Image 1 (spheres, rainbow, N blue to C red):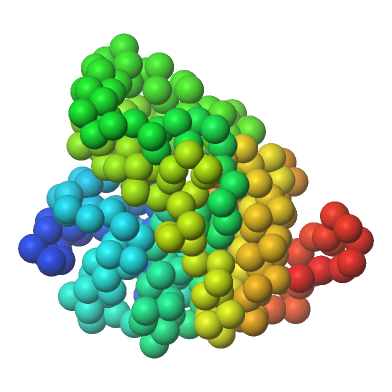
Image 2: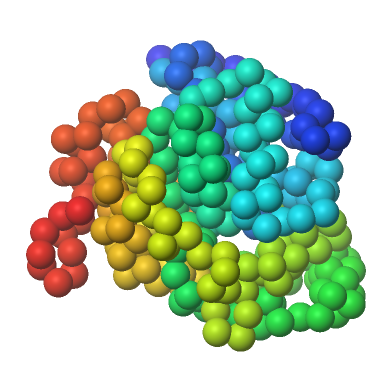
Length: 302
């Protein structure tokens, strides 16, 4: 089947020039990336899901071509996403978010439950305190140091080093398309994107990990839409047990582990990721259950 054409578009949201990509027709799937990435990370997903859905991939403010906004707090950013859907006159949607994007969409679902029919959280932030020491270190950078660091890394040599260093989030980088690597290199050259990403770390983290006041774990029981939590077994940023625990708190939660994947599972193990996502988006929940992995403690599937 021929893939529907993908278009690049801009709209004004909260006074900000907002970049997004879309393809296909039908029920809407909204894709939101994490920090240090943009909507182009979702290109493979867009092309494959657009055969049956209208797929929209949004670049968040300050990252990947969308103008910056003052607050990057996940709840505040969720209001931006809600206004984005309003401007497009779109909703409700199947909401798919990676890392920080998953945190934002969890806040969106809590604040605007009428906008989300299904939620997919891919190695999402906000689901527990535990995080990698590097993330803790970035969260502790003073504002002036973060500014200087962003300026330094955005230089040609620094951007290449940053892109290579980001490999620790991937476990199978050879499976990532070359155009995605080119996108990451371009983002690493953007001082604004780097500075916004650091501000996310500073907003969401502290010396003990993810900040207690930004966590959504105690509110997960309020999310009654079907929710699929996808995690790479080898994720080094957020531990896999944290995702499993979050899925147990969700009234309609399901948990799927991708064995060979790291933090960016939709790039690291794309085919396996689509095998998990596809049935959930298509309402084939029995197949979702078949893809779910048995808990490490042997108590069965979620």
